[in-house]
Image (cartoon, rainbow, N blue to C red; front, side):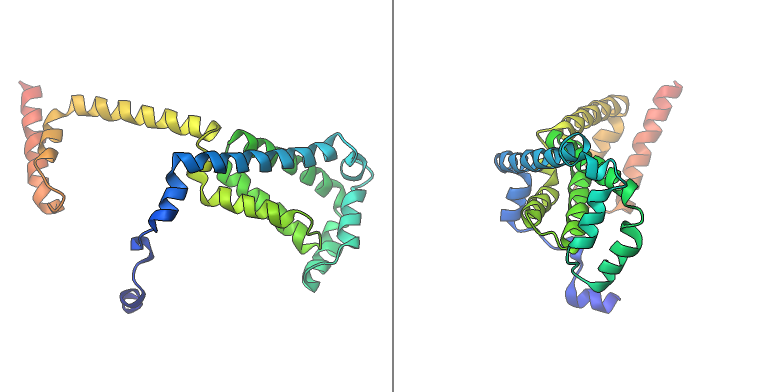
Length: 222
């Protein structure tokens, strides 16, 4: 394993191209990713609403999932084993699967539109689209999948303007306050760390830290 790593290198040390870094971290590009996220969320909300309360309600929420049965039996599956899965599992359980599909589409849409749990919503979106494509329904699935992949790849910025961004901002502010409080409580340790440079090894750093904590203990004891 070590010889293989010497040849191909460590993947964790591969540098990300600057263009990709900019696309993933830029606040300007975040506006584009946010627009894509909200649009995809609205599309999923429309699909979910149609199944929960709209014209497709009888086929998914009632009548034993007749819409799911038609979807599974009339499409052309991508592989024979997937067709066997549709006929042996999906069709007999079409009733509750229809409810799951309708609720899932609606929930995914809400999460994407609000920017809440964005990476998981994008993954769930891809999972649903995978089943649709495998069952022989292409339609706009490829376009939706492209948007979901972009949102997933840029999740830090695509979720920045949303609930995830608000939660992240709160955690960052809280971490800053906790760090400032620890600095005030242990100024000797901070001063010792500032005297060390980036090349200092852990073994060389320990005596400095031990000395600072010892001095702090003596002061507190007095």
